[in-house]
Every structure is written in C-alpha cells, then in structure tokens.
Amino acid sequence: MENLPVTQLSGWKFYNREDHLRFGQWATEVFYPVWMKSPYITGINRYQIIKENPDYCTFISTYHFINLKAFINPWKNPESANIIKDMVTTWGNKRDVLWGYLYQPERSVSNPELAAKVKKELSVDDAPSIHIEAFDLTPEKEGEYYSWFTDMGDEVFMARIMKRPGVLGYDHFRFLTPGWSYVEFEYVSPKERFGPPYVLIFYFDSVQHCLDFTKSRELAAFRAGLTPYFPQGLKLKWNVDYKLIGSWQRDK
Image (tube, rainbow, N blue to C red; front, side):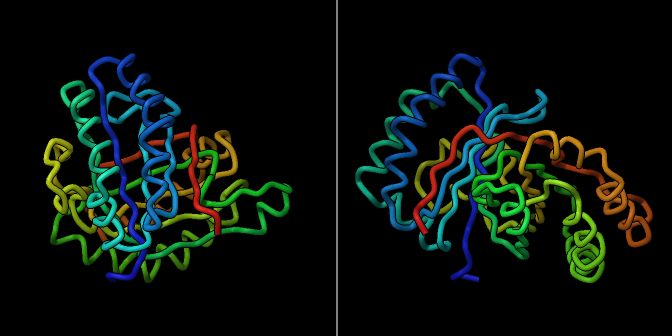
C-alpha cells in the first residue's frame, strides 16, 4: 500500500465568491506551478461544479502523488512551505475546508480506445468532466460494501457503465487518512475529519456525457444492485458533477 499512488481531494468553500475567484487566479499563477516543481507530484487538476449546490464546493482540486511518502515530502520543501504560509495569511480566514482527504486507488480502469476514436489526446488525467459518488457507510458496512463491489459491482455493473458513450474510465478509491494529519498546518483540516471510506470517480470526454450518465439506466442499475445486500438502503454522501478548468500534468 505504501507504494501505491495517492490522490488528495481538496475543496474549500469561501464565504465570498469573489474571494474564491481571486484565490483561483492566485493558485493557478503561483501555487500550482510551485507544487508541480516537486518530483513527487504527477499532476494537479482544478474543477468547477456544473450545477451549483450549497452542499458542495464550487471549485475543487485533485493532487496526485506517486505514493504516501511523496505527499509528505513537498511540505518539507522551503519554497512549498513558504507558499503555504502565504496562503493561510491571505485566505485562511475567508473559507471553510469541506474536503481535505487522501485516497488510494483500489481499482482503476481506463478506456484509451475512446480517446483514439475521437482523435483526441484525452485520458482520465485530464478528462473534461467527472462524476463523484460515495455512499455514507458505517464501519460495520464498509467490509460488506467492498465485498459487494469486488464481486458484483466491478465485474457486472462497472463493465456496463464502461460501454456508455463518453466514459473514459473510473477510479474506485479507498479512504486513507485526513491528508493534513501528516503536516503541521492544522488550519486546513476539513470540517469533517474523515471522508467516505470508498469513493468512485467517473471520467468523461464531455460535460454532456457526464450529465447524461447521471440519468442513465446503468448508474441506476449499479445503485439498485446494492439493495439485496443492504435492504435498508444506502444513502449517497457525495453525488456531484464537475468540469475541468485547469490541468497541470507531469510529462510521462
């Protein structure tokens, strides 16, 4: 597990939208370029919500690291540490942190044939749109859900979803830890210390294909497939769509 890639899901909700827009410009011009200097980061993506929802951040970022140790290393770099201090001084009292969690992939599936078919250099690394979904699982239900997903969800329902138009792939993530627990910057700890134990992120070649997916029979069948195993039902904790507005990727 220590050598698996790690993804940090980060989402801030600013009290003032204009502050968030200014922060986005600062992050794009200053913060992200500095962090991409680290050899331990493989990419950063910035997204904007497609349909405004008060329960979610208007903007989120995903940070991709080669492994858990790689997540810790950039914080020890003086330039990175200084820019974090600059961030908290300028923006620290202007937002709530909704997401700040580290996840590791349990399963990653991509569809390179689709990108080739539409003659675009698209991949899950820079997909134009994503759908994020996670169930509100109690500790007692986590193991049952994971067993169901590996036995039925992945083999049956995900296989059908991958045949839908525009699906570039998906990641099934396992919650690792509150990301900021490894560093001394407690001012960026999320309001809810623990994220959902498992998160699905679906990647699409367009916003329209993403929105079509949320109303699809395939997604409805995936959710309904859980009913025999959880007769009292499972509540969705995260269910939201975002579009890509910025991508910083290390050359492969």
